Image 1 (cartoon, rainbow, N blue to C red):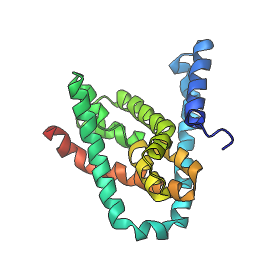
Image 2: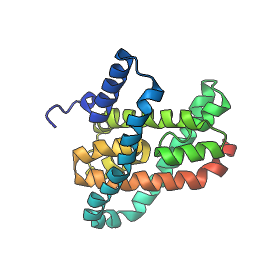
Image 3: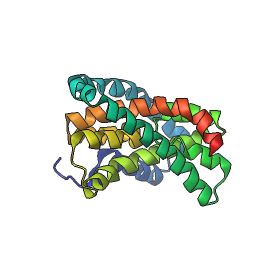
Image 4: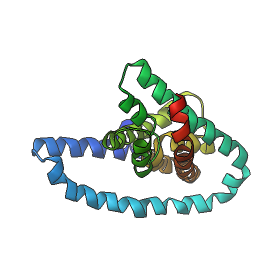
Length: 203
């Protein structure tokens, strides 16, 4: 990247630019929806394209399968628990507590999971976007500050908590980071869908 600052991440800058333009031109959300639908449709092919670096780095993934699985399970559950507990500590409503628990997974899974546990689907989508942008912008910087330089570990951390948006940033770091992040994103969604319905009531 020519400008490697986390604040020049394409997802962050493009989102900010679109918001500013819509506000300046007084374009409502309903008027913007047709354009959004086109971009949402293109997410499908973009997600499928992430399978290419995943395939090319399959040997690396298989070599670290056990620690990767352990990291994914611990990371995913920790994200759910911390989100709910932090929301409760701040005195937020139960609806927001439930919705915040799905912020780290991709939007389609987050929306369906939020409905199951009494969350708000629209708010879930907003939380997912926020978590993804924060992960893409600040994730690599926080990992560097923590001294985590291993490409595999960086990809695993970003993909587990920042889904597709974070993965788009991990891909820019390198093929291993991108492959591991895309795998982590998918498996984190599966783990969340399986454990959330019984874990959330316990929290």
